[in-house]
Every structure is written in C-alpha cells, then in structure tokens.
Figure 1 (cartoon, rainbow, N blue to C red):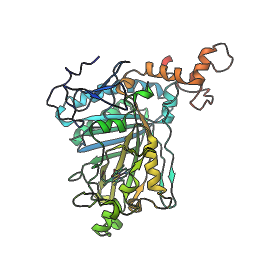
Figure 2: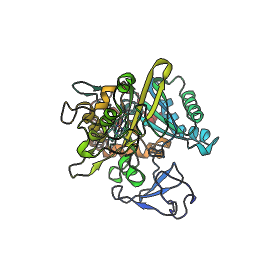
Figure 3: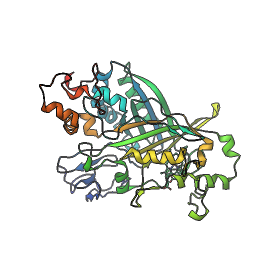
Figure 4: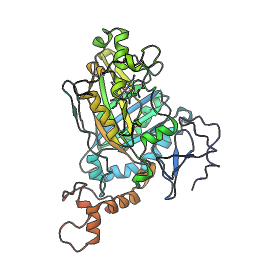
Length: 403
Ligand code: HEM
C-alpha cells in the first residue's frame, strides 16, 4: 500500500494541485484515498488494494494525436498482448523527454470488448447511439480502440502514435486519425477559449472516474469522441456579438454572458445539466482544434470523459435534439459531427493484467454465476458463450484465459 506521506516530490505542479504530502478523501469515491505521485499518475489506495487510473484528467496539453482503430478479425490475441505491453511503449517514448508531459489514454469499444474478453461488459459500455435531431445528427462511426495521446511537443505525440501503429501492424485498420493543437490562448477554431468550465482537482476525478461502488471497475472511465468540421465562411459572416450569443460567453474576454441575457440555444446553456437533486453534472473535456488550411478543413476534435456516459449522452441530446426539442445548439449550425464513438477506459492495472477484474465481472453476472453453479447443465458451459444481454456467442473468438 502506498504511504501518502512518502509519495512523490513536493514541487510537482499537478492539474489536481494535490500536495504529495497530503491525501485527499473523496466523498463519492468513498473509502478511497487519492495520492498524486506525479503530474500524470494517481493511485487509488483503497482497502481492496491500489488501482491506478489512466491519465484522463491532466493539465491541458499543447498537442494531441487521436487514433481510432478497428481490429481485424483474428487479431484478438495479438491485441490482448499489445494491451499488456502498451504501458511499456508509453514509458519508452516518455523517458526520452520527460518534461513534455506525454500521456496516452487507451479506450476499448463495446464490440471489441466482446471479442477480447469472456466476461460481461462494464455496465455502461455500449456502442455510441446516434442522436438524431430535426436538423442535426450526431453520427455513430466504427471504433474498437482509441488512443488519446497528449504532450506539449508534437513530435512526442507523433512518435508514440508511430510506435503504437508499429506494434499493432497487421492487426488494425485506421478508422480516423487527427493531429490536434492548442490555438493561441486555448481557443478553438471558432475563436472561443475552450475548456474554461472544465472541473479541476477533486471535482475532475469525481466527474471522470468510476467510484468504489462499481468495483471491480473503480478508477475506470468512459469516453465519447466526435470529430466536428466547421463551416468557417458562415461562422465568420456572424458578428462577434452573434457568435458570443451562440456560445454563451463573450468572445474576447471569455466571460460568461449573464443568464438573463443568454440565448436559450447557446452552447453553454444546453450543456449545463443537473441531476434530479439539483447537482450540476460535469464531464472532463479536452477539445483540440485541427485543420488543413490548404484544403479549407477546419475542425474541433471533441473528447469528453465521464464516470457515466449517460451524462455526456444527455448533453448530446440537448445539443442535437434540443431542450425543449427543436431548440438545438446554435453552434451545430456551423459545426457538423462526422464521427462519433464511445469507449471504456480501464485502469492501468487492468491493461497490465485483466485477469482478476474479468473474474470479478463474471462473478457479478447472474447468467455467468448461474452457469458456474450448475456445471452439469447441457449446452453452453461457460460465461464465454454469453454476452451481457444473455445471447449465445457460439463461435466467438474470445478466450483471453485460454490462449
Ligand atoms: C464543435 C464542437 C464543440 C466546440 C467548438 C465547443 C466549444 C466550447 C466552448 C468554447 C465552451 C465554453 C468554455 C468552456 O467552458 O469550455 C464550451 C463549454 C462546454 N461544452 Fe463544448 N464544444 C463543443 C462540443 C461539445 C460537446 C459535444 C459537448 C458534450 C457532449 C460539450 C460540452 C460542453 C460543456 C459541458 C461545457 C461547459 C458548460 C458550462 O458549464 O458552462 N461541448 N464548449
């Protein structure tokens, strides 16, 4: 177990601003003590043993590389092996320039989960469902693996992407690849400072990470990504005042427009949502501009981490269907979503060795448990033949434990 009094060095500047000499107690992540080891790694030190989340909520980086891949049939075993090796690949690139804050988050899509693991899916892992409004649609596009690579220098992002693609050579196809960058003072290409109201410190962990009530998934996260293409000609034809009303914040100063003066269809209005008890529901975003001026391509790569993807999905419903229906997000009139995928983000421990977590998931699954208890029953004899909805998976390529 980690001793919070001894961990880390006292001068690291962390997004969470956690003093390495003190531990934090999280009300929602009950009975879990959080300790900052360095700016990228948090260890959950709990009675069941520590778990280390992937670096989903870090200080905004200057550059990012997004890779969305699909896994070829038959490559499941190689991908399982790769997942156990990926931390070493990240370490090798990071160690060449440790000041550049290289991080990488790995996400696993619902369809791939069923192909890789003979255990029920994490409760909220599902394929991204398109959100169809009267005017705009959030499309769903293929994605088995997500790599969200961030660093202050683009060459580090590039090198890690290259090493990952080398390691997965012959196993995957690229569904989408975007190199993003921070534009002036954290602005998107619509010209607005992006990320201001992101939760920080403890609230960021609360928003992004699965709590101890969902063991064995404690410390995991869910992420939704979408690639948006902007119609800059139309957007630039608006006055600055009209653009500010579309976003709900003043463009130059980034100060929020007072509620009484905000438009109902402003982006920040439709994305401010509450739980039934009035608590504001937050996600952790790190949008990145991207573009190719020579091809007149200007876009925002949206990425949002949540402890429950239903929060992000509700924001998307507000944006695309509207609240009330028909009152859609004004920025969608200038921004088209061309991709959309949902991924589960396991802990670093899971990537390293998923055996215990998979076993715990099997034990929790009533269908699998029933099978365990009645081993003489004819027909399918293991949880590997079932998916979460109970349907048969005869002929499945799964079998992490058997290869
Ligand atoms: C074209 C894509 C998008 C752009 C350019 C964009 C840009 C922005 C900007 C400039 C802000 C205000 C500053 C800030 O607090 O970050 C903002 C706020 C926000 N955005 Fe987006 N965004 C996009 C897509 C999305 C999507 C798809 C979601 C959710 C599914 C989302 C959720 C939010 C939330 C929760 C806030 C903070 C609202 C508040 O608490 O005031 N955004 N976005």
